[in-house]
Amino acid sequence: MVDSLVAAASVIAAAIAVGFAGLGPGIGQGNAAGQAVEGIARQPEAEGKIRGTLLLSLAFMESLTIYGLVVALSVLFANPFVG
Amino acid sequence: MDSFLLSKIEVGSHLYINFSDTLHLHGETFFVSLFVVTLLISFLVLSTRDLKKIPGSWQNLAEVIYELVKSIALTQMGPSYYSQFLPFVATIFLFVLGSNLSGALIPWKLIEIPSGEFAAPTNDINTTACLAILTSLAYFSAGFKIKGIGYFKRYIKPAPFFLPINIVEDFTKPLSLNFRLFGNVVADELTVTVICSLVPLIIPLPIMMLGLFASSLQALIFATLAAAYIGEVIE
Image 1 (spheres, each protein chain N blue to C red):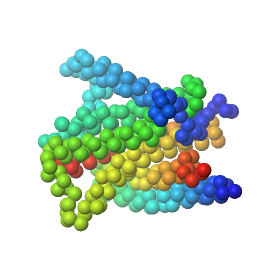
Image 2: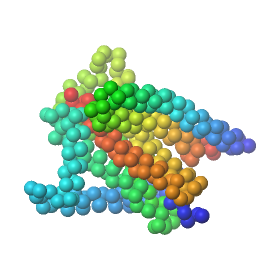
Image 3: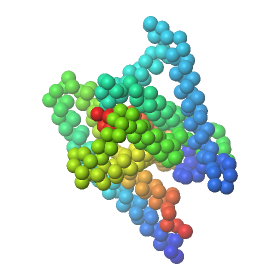
Image 4: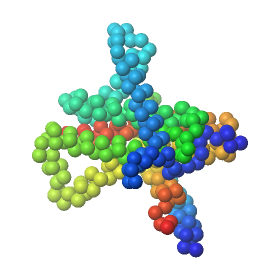
């Protein structure tokens, strides 16, 4: 009984973890990409440099989502609360 | 249908090699990382064994990698110190790149093992934790080597009450490096596996390309961050 409760709670927790972890970085990546497009439109000769920096910073933001994913995975596959 | 799957959805099952009751080894991680290291060493030795003024194809590749790693170290650590720490950054970069690409490119599923499966070594959190702790040790020793005991002044900058934050930062740096690499590699493999189990043909290909791109980007980021942490300490 307790185990099934823990399992249900873990599934919901994993869903919430991934969902909310996606929110913030999504907004941030949108901002960064928008600014980069603006920069390229204003200064097309700087495209290569802007693209490199954009990709690197996008990967940093992506890692925040990945933290949520790691928490979700550990809740699903390595749950410390399941007896 | 089952044979179409390139890998099973398994997180946390390993091929255990037991030395004693308390000492285990994750066999698949160990063998694949040994394979990656052997491949990297033989590539580097063969490509730089007989250097020519006009480089051949292998030497050219090695030179491209060297230039990339050198530019990472140079931009993060400045011209006077980068050459001391270039080998460390290059080692980290090559190992992470090699293991990520080996997980993405080599069809390990064809080799059957009793439990778990062969995959990228960075798919195991112990490998990434080891790399992250090595990075921590590297910037500690870099600080001591270059600043001596004055290294500890870093902890009370910009003001003494920043001390707890600075100490916590020493723990969060390896933790975030660890989770970033592990999570990205596992997320790539899980996405490909889930999409393969839904539509086994053609549809997963763009996702696999994205995975290849992301895994090389992760190697670049790990090396950049390691160099940046060292650079921050010795500046």
